[in-house]
Amino acid sequence: MNNYFEAIRTSLIYFPLVALLSIVPFAYFQYKRMGYVQFNRSLVFYIFAFYGMTAFFLTILPLPPLSEGFCEYRGSVTPNFLPFRFVKVTMQEIQGNISLFSIVKSSTFMVTSFNVLLLMPLGFFLRYLFQVKHAGIATLIGFLVSLFFEITQLTALYGLYPCRYRHFEVDDLITNTFGCFIGFVIARYSNLLPNVSSKPLVNQTEVTLTQRFLAIFFDSLVVILFTSYIIEGLTQNIWLLSLMKVGLIFFYFIFISKMTGGQTIGKKLLGIRIIRMDGLKLTYKDLIARYGIFLILPFLVGEVSRFLIDTRFDDKLYLFLYLFFLAIWFFGTVMVTFIRKDHRGWLDRFAHTTQVLANQKNADK
Image 1 (cartoon, rainbow, N blue to C red):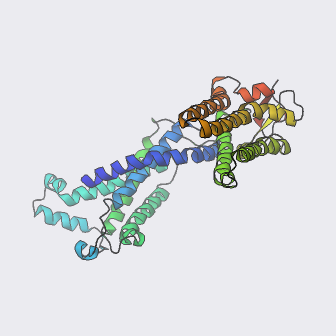
Image 2: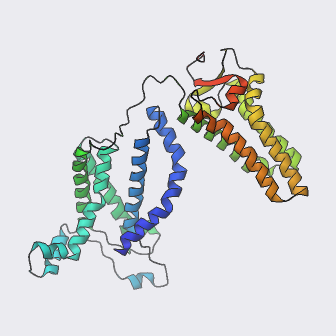
Image 3: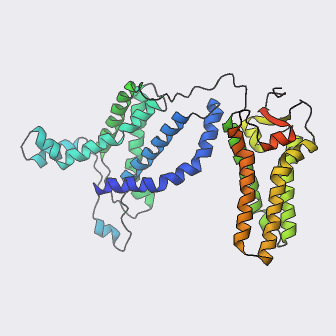
C-alpha cells in the first residue's frame, strides 16, 4: 500500500510543474482546433494528465537504489507469460477454503483488483474526454498502454537498471485491458457530467481573450529568450547593451508589425492583427504610439535604473523599480483587456488602434 501512496505523492510534487509548462501550448492547440479554450475541457484534461502520471509512477515506483551487486541482491525477476496464473495462486492462498470472503481477502486477488482499477479511468476518459465511440478501439488503446507499462518493467526502465526489479506479467495485460473496457462502458452513463465536447466555435467575429493572452505571451517569450541568450553576451557595455535591447524591441514590435500589416509572430500564429480605428493604413507613428509609451519607455527606464543602482545604490531599489515598471506593463497590456468590455488595453486606446481577426479589414465603428 505504501507504494501506491508514494506514486500519488510523487505525482502531487511534479504535476504542478508539468501543468505550468504545458498550459500555454495546450491552450494554443485547443484554440487552434476549437476557436476558444473551454474551461470544463481544460479541467478534465488536467485531471486526466494527473491520473496518467500517477498510473505510470505506480508501475515503476519505488525506484530501488543502485549499489554494487544490485542484481545479486534483487535475485532473479522472471517474466511470467502464463495467462490467468492469478487464479491458481489465489487458490493456493485460500488453501481450499473457497468462499467469497477468503477470496477477496487474499493478496493476489487484491493485486489483481488494483490492476483492473488501474486503467478503468483511462477507458472512462477515452469516451468522456477524447470521445472515442467504439469499445474495440478503446480496448485496443488500453492494451497498448498496458503493454507499454509491462515493457517498461521488462526492460528495467529501458536499460537504466542493470537488471529487472519488477515482474512482467501477462495477467497484468489481461486485467489492465479489461479494466479499460469496464471504464469505457461506465462512461456511457456520463451524460450527467459537464459537457467537454470538442466542437469548434462557429461564426467567430471578435478576437477572444485567449487569442490576446497567447499572442502577448508568445511575443514576450520570443523577446525575453532572444535578449537573455543572444544579446546579453555580445558586449559588456551596459549602455550599448540597453540600446541593443531597445533596438530589438523596436524591430520586433514596430518594424515587423509595419511590414506585415499589424502582425507580430505571436499575432500571426493566433490569426489576429492590429488596425487603426478609422480603417486607414497603419503607420510607424501609430505603432510607435501603441508600443513606445507602454513598452519601450518602461523598459528603457528600467535599464537606466539598473545602471544607476549597480554603480551607486543597492539592489533592493532596482528590484522595486523593475517590478514597478513590470506591473505597469502587465496591467496596461494584459489586465485591462480583461476588465474592459471592448477588450482594448492602454496600448490600443492611446494609439487609436484595435485588434481584429486577420481576415477582417476594418474595426467595428
